[in-house]
Image (cartoon, rainbow, N blue to C red; front, side, top):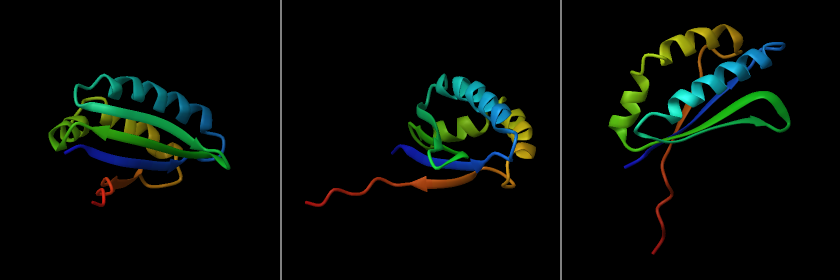
Length: 100
């Protein structure tokens, strides 16, 4: 079963360019992971400092491999002082079962 989540965070005022650069570089690496099926980065139209990242991994093992990738820690260390939250807020998603 795929592992799907939404990661959210808000860039501090004035850090948007740096946050965008960091997330774009990180996205390139994540998208190369064997088990990554999607890593789509958005900003909220009405609040452009609010970032939403839609992520899909092949399965739990692929997600764990993502969490253990060597570039994840440095990315989060660089990102944390640039965002309003203590860390990215993760919401795990399940597909809606089809009604039969």
